[in-house]
Image 1: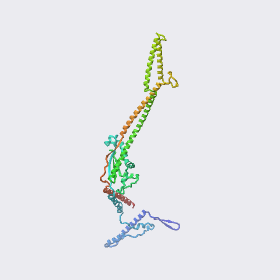
Image 2: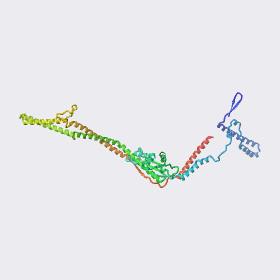
Image 3: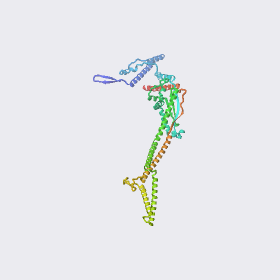
Image 4: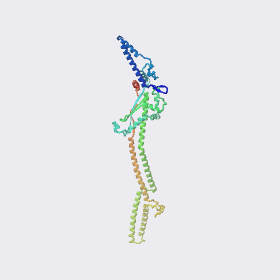
Length: 472
């Protein structure tokens, strides 16, 4: 493309490189011009030649029109230096087509290596199947009919999911090593294993856990509550030994979960029972100490006895006074009979005073060391004070006994609920030593690999041809 540029003295021509669209249009125009020239030359030759030479002239003109022409720059291309690149024919370096080459690279060669691996190199894999379930006494009756999933997951279902996750975890590998003394890595580092599956016996546990998840397959059926376990190994004895070890540590896990659940449910109730029992023992100790200090067994009975004795003394005193009054009407004051009655009345009054003094509450405002009328400092104790203390301790004893009884009932209830939460690990399909290796399926795996390679190649061809068609 040229654009004239006018200056003061001369006019210069500025050349700009053609774009791809402009180059394509120029090629199409040149091709149409050559075809038109060939048609015009053919028509002129046919008109000028005799009828007998018409066929020969047409053949010569056609050969000249279709013969390759030397690269000649047209006037329109003089201003563009990049036109020769489109007119110069490229030489083909390879005579094989890209389709055949890609088929060879993407299908034939990988398929040959895959077939060689599955047929010759792949080590046989033995599979051990085992089925187990986590059961408990609180399992719903609906679960036995397969209706448990309609009412939500149960405790056993949650425990089954826990066991499934535990089997695929690094903790299982550690527990098998620490509790059973078995290192699972030794079963997958033997020399009889092919290079794709053989591992180092010193592989870190983090990486071995990823490898272990590829060698174990576990599935849980939420409808029946059963768990199916598949263990893959490269010998029959190894697969059986690995499965036994996994089931042992899994059973121990379920037992620990059950024991932990029972302890959690009974811990609070047990603490309440211990607290109530300690309170009851303390009140009983206070009662025993009070009885030992006061030298009495039951202050209530002693109080009743003193009260009856006081009433009896009052009756006798009243009778003695009556007899004294009767005797004074007939005899003098110095009569022996009157003197005896007076002495009797005085003795009864003294005894009645002592009893009444014991039955009165002590005055806190007075000095407790002050002698009483009987000349003693509460030697025999104060019955109302002792009775008040005993009644307080009796009330505390009743409350403590009731609290202890309630705590025991709650503890028994928690034990019953804990027994309902008890779970156990039940294996109903025991692992058996396999007799033959089920994997790899050499022919089927080879055929599937070839199909996958063919699908990849066809997809690549589709995208390649799609891009090529849209590139023009």
